[in-house]
Length: 115
Image: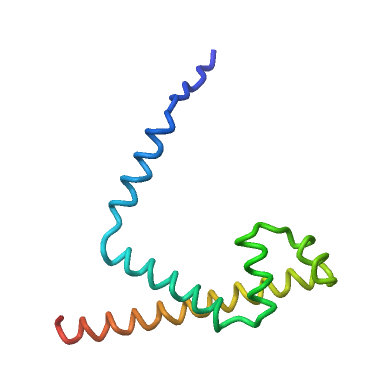
């Protein structure tokens, strides 16, 4: 006979404590990197995206509306909303990649100088 795996029951408090422990383990560097990424996303939302990209992005990812709901609100097709969201995400990804490249160049320069 095949044995079935026993599932361990875990309380909500145990899960919450585990998540809190993982968050505490973030190093200062990871925390700084996370803050930099958040700052870039906020900056992109403010200045790096078109007004339509920003509106769709906020409606979709902050307010949780579907692509069809956004399309209905603006009187456009769902595919137009999807294309706009894809371009917004690509722009944010580009800006995050540019920041990562800057960080790598700075790290490389610091290592060459022996710092």
